[in-house]
Image (cartoon, rainbow, N blue to C red; front, side, top):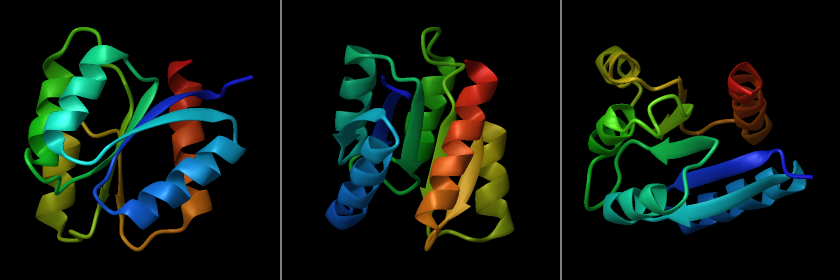
Length: 125
């Protein structure tokens, strides 16, 4: 039984593998995009239950992708967790104002991220 479909937008291959593995262990189906253009194509193909997204995606900034998600009628309510090495208050506030559901700074605790995801999905499901 699937816990949901989660799209991961991350350019770091090792981190992506860790996320896919841990989410798979918890029953989530995952798909990965490595840059902003792939992210938009993937979102258009199959709407996810949630998105975990790096804020600094190559090709198209994560904030641009977040704006697109929030303006899309099919995706506007999908929970989006931003992963970022940016820790300044203005970066966090900007992402939240753009519609991020949560903001997690790198490095992070993998199980904490999965718990945050589960919490967000329980609110929408």
